[in-house]
Image 1 (cartoon, each protein chain N blue to C red):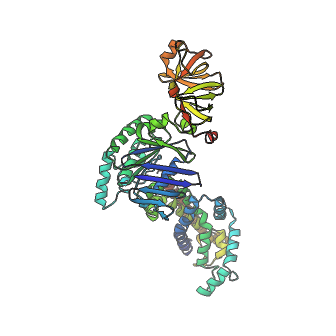
Image 2 (tube, chains in turn orange, purple):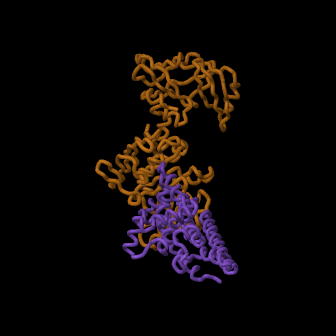
Image 3 (cartoon, rainbow over the protein chains, first blue to last red):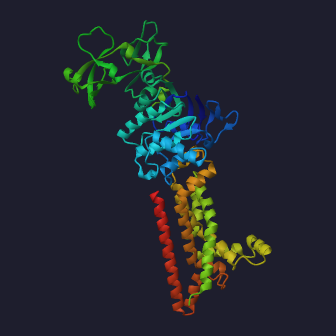
Length: 363
Length: 221
């Protein structure tokens, strides 16, 4: 089990906690400059500005209270860099051997074995400069694994390779993981990557861990507007919760529109909420008595793959996004400037209770 | 006629200067390359000063610093038994000082060019600071280090102003080949001056060619 609690004020703020079980892959996601790499490099011991604790199984790598700070080269960390960071003056084989332990023959055998495992057999004699990005990253992964690490740390390992290579590497990583009984932490700015690869994710923003959980759960239940926006939600709004007695759910005054929600509102007052764009529906004239039906004027319609992202102005001067398949929009005759009827199911509105102080800082 | 004594002296001086500046250059260049200090430019400027200062100005200050009236000169004379100025040792010290930028700048650029993550990777491969330096950083900087050495040697062979100021013109002690050429011309021995000049020209050209090749090696890494 990897447990991390870090606190730092310089050079950047960090207030992060993270837990990762053996065999588990935790993705740390956040925008550029959110402190993801700093967090990862602090776990590895490459940066030493933070106080707190880093523990892996029985080993304590950092415990600022007890005065423990194990130097990077004594931590058994497998680290894969975004820039590959291979040794350019060594061959592929020597790059991997450099991280292996033991006698020369044993190191060479271990290096060859792990190179074969990442599909790099036959290229042992090449220099890194002669390899493609994907091949270099495989060598980087082999070098990280040959050390028999206690944790595997991946720092945006796929962001420098092309899309096709990336997808192949995803599959290879998923395969490798099946045989890895160590905690793996993946830093990425791609929510899609986290959803694809991770068992659990940690959302980092301005150095603070805002939420931990399974990717799908975090997407559906962000704890605050920053998380919602980071997860790609386009409809993140603020309103005022009415008094909580309107059971079973509640009502939010959304700049003059009454919005019924099925989740109970814990207290009256300012509240933030979000709705997934594919949960905003084009309503037909038939469901006249359903709540949360609004007229809206279509502002923009942007085709995105098989769907169209439609932005529409509501009577309360908020702009809402909805995503619908192209054929549905064509059948309804939705076009820019037209008025459409939208509906939002009560249970699809996710209310974020822990707001407004934090949301006011969001960008 | 070729002044073989002067040539020999010049080569000895060039070799000794290069050998001293190999560790000194690395010791100066590496921390400077890694420094994030706001005052880094000041130190870099100070170390580069010999590059732009007239050799006579530098020579003057070195002469003053080595003279019997200076603490350095006095201590040296008391311990060794002869004056530092106008001796080979004094010449060597001057040569080291005025060659610092020639040795350091190529090394500085080489250390700066090493990807910081490659060095971090070395640590995470289990290499301690020394091992990481010797197995990864130094090999990557080696072309720059060699280039600094070659530049230093070539520059030492050709230096005139500082040598004349600090060393004077003592055969076998401080008369370098550059001074010898000047001497030949003063004595209207144009043939001898021409021979030595041509020799120095060829050696300098070879040295610069070698440095350029090393530099290209560095870029291809």
